[in-house]
Amino acid sequence: MTTEFKWEITDILVLQQPQPNYIVELGFTLTGTDGDVTASTNGRVAFDPANPAEQFVAFETLEERTLVKWVKEVLTEEGVASQEAIVQSKIDEIVTPPVVPQSVEFPWKANLFTVQI
Image (cartoon, rainbow, N blue to C red):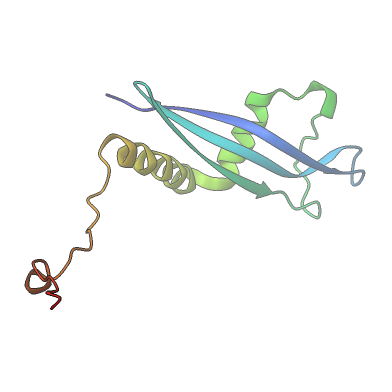
């Protein structure tokens, strides 16, 4: 199956300068779903108020899809792929759990017993 990824904004931090409600940090959750298996990861990206965007967007007009676009732009294609790989590896571990070695008794001690006289 193919994993479907969904990005959600979970937190917004703002300053009141250089513009009112200037976003300086966004928190996000990336959730992946493959069939009935779901996994997610969380992250944060920061924006430098010393380098404001050329076009200021009024806070009250923002939509989540715009903020998700900004997150992806900050992460770059490589960062987006990395976040998706993290979620995919979590899904893969659920679907096919890793083989974990188990501790066993030494074969020469397995059949020991004590005789009392």
